[in-house]
Amino acid sequence: METSVKIISTRYVTHNVKQFRLEKPAGFTFTPGQATELSVNQPGWKDKKNPFTFTGLITDPYLEFTIKIYPDSAEGVTNQLSKLAVGDHLILRDAWGAIEYKGPGYFIAGGAGITPFIAILRDLNQKGKMAGNKLFFSNKTDKDIILADELKSMLGPDAVFLISSQKDSVYDTRRIDEAFLKAEVSDFTKHFYVCGPDAMVEQINGILTSMGADADSVVFER
Image (cartoon, rainbow, N blue to C red; front, side):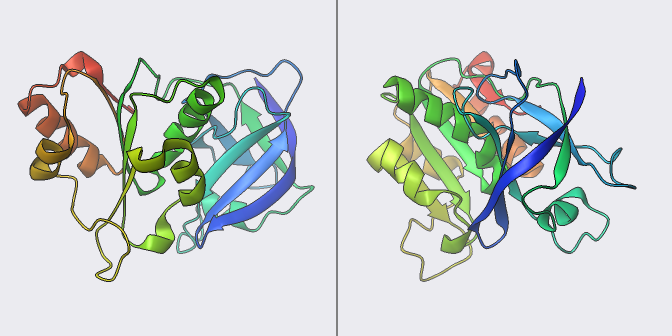
């Protein structure tokens, strides 16, 4: 399925991450953690598809996406998205795969890797089922943290922000490595949800497996 949908609102949630809310076609459905392919409904851009995860909830009257903008890539879809305004149109396709919630555990995100978790965490919060979940969210600087206030509101002390490249950060400056996981994870039999840069995901999956996590309990975006 392909359908053209109108942008009904936009706003920057960090200096380089923009939130888009779109018209929701009648009957369109998805589950938290799923993604779709979007393209800009303009000449020369219609076939340039990029995958983005839904960050809103199915109960919302709109579709929401929270997208990191890469302005240095002149030919990139996100750079073109940054130029769009309310009233412009995107091409929406069917929802698919990505990350599925299987039960309480640890969410480990790097940068824009938080986006598949936003809808999952919002859904759990709405249903009163947040207990037993913890978030480790790594970014380069404090200003890079996407939806920091909302994540803190939903998770309280179980939202742990880690900063890798800012010495005067108000947050934890450790890296998510073997020493960190050994210190912060109390139960390696729980589920782990991992999303971020490929190298980070590969490294963390290897560490978790070596520390006793069941491979079937480690969920990552494929």
